[in-house]
Image (cartoon, rainbow, N blue to C red; front, side, top):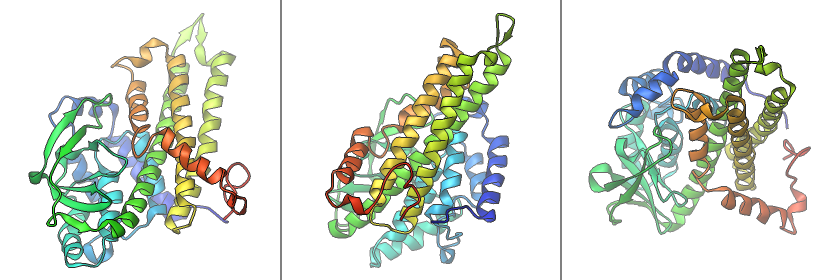
Length: 358
């Protein structure tokens, strides 16, 4: 497998990174925490202007018709900057679910109404999937895609009651959604819904893995910068060998996780049979890197790394909260175990040395 990103993919990623560098500063995140919704309409409008809201939307609905593989570098940047807006849930996962709906009058009507609005940055979506007892960003969603008995239901916010759930990370606001399923809200039955939800879960897991990778890189960069600025015993603490080892170990875990994430993106984009295994593998590798980066970041910063004034805590808390999004470690380890213990698994490899073997 020859796996390299194209010049266009890298250039687009670099352009988005430059936009986020200017517009998504830690100071903005702190300001948004103190607002009722925790979101910025100006930032959402900017994302739409950059083409991100319509990234997955088919061209006939005003989008760019990009695929799952095109999203992966963008999702890493979303993690690196801890983007507060529900970009991935709306423009990648939500738009993808609408595209995947069956060609029925209800499915066609939803696509016609909502995909152009998503592409224009005029709508937010929230997803309550089979692994999500709490729904992120439901308070700003115009439409909720909800799971019930394997079915897919499309429910406007006016038809639900939201109960806020305390969250460790104030940029990711969680809600319990109270609603009544009906024939009117159902847009895919259980048979159709299984296919749609299976793909949505894999997309969601991969989106989390990519964000965790970006978060780990940001925490490493912050720790390196702090080790240069902070002095102890008359010298920069980064000069001490123990701290060098800490940061080198974090860098190794990040680099080991990245190809696993890219492999999972390739599997998802090409609808490969073992996609669930690959995305769970990516989640576990990225989560390990992010939690390790948080742990070592705290050791580099000392106890002040937890405090409001230090930027590390922003990205550390986002990593902690994403650890339970779209399935926890137990769920993903069980998917890996099911593959490893399968008597037919010898025909498909997994792990070091086999990442890019189909």
